[in-house]
Length: 313
Image 1 (tube, rainbow, N blue to C red):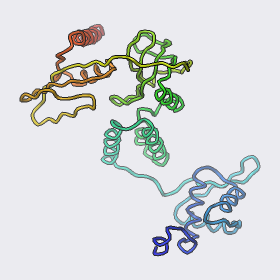
Image 2 (image 1 turned 120 degrees about the horizontal axis):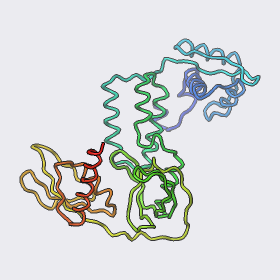
Image 3 (image 1 turned 180 degrees about the vertical axis):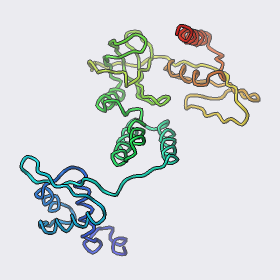
Image 4 (image 1 turned 90 degrees about the horizontal axis):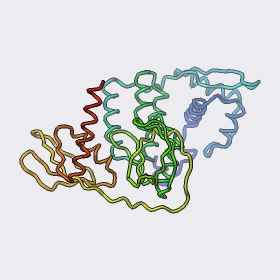
């Protein structure tokens, strides 16, 4: 330890090679079946080892892994003998309370996380799920992220287009009007209410809109000509009625302009009317839109359509 603290360098003097090689062999065989030659090559090219491994030494390391509970499987694949770890005792175990805590923490983090970080987090949970034997928990971890069932290539492409305000044509499966082609100048990708959206100017109608990424069937084409985003911002005032001792968390684009007992008057500003509507609707009966008049009419029309939809069922 003194040597490492002094030099900050790993040397032969600081390593238990039996343990180190066993760990390396374990991690190598967990990935996929490996032949003796592949194991030899890996050990020979390792930055700290650079040495060959005899077949007898390999058997000793296999025996060490077996002693701690690993099952070594030997099979012939296309005429080549390969080794793999069929089972091992290093299983992640979570009780129901821990599962709820993991999900709660994840949901809190995902509210304010960049999409690129969300992708990394999704990979992490997928990796964890591979080593969990509880099938219910495995499913929860695999499907926890809002991007779990979305093609990663579409996400990366949309991030690139948003960065450059690229005009693209997408084939979109709308819940209201079915499958159709939509042209949009992409502005940003964001997570709202646990779902992944892209937002931008719909070129055909010159309106700022949001689209669920998991509803995008494919990206048809891109337009490399320069486009500008000139959609004006919308400011909506609403009144929120708080319950006793209730805390209210403002969004970045909101501000309180008046406080009166248990009532807050709040302004929210965005280019995206859909985003504002989602926020208003999330407050349910605690919220009353104050202005502008045309937006009040929009909310009333939306609520009326929702009511008609329930009555018609």
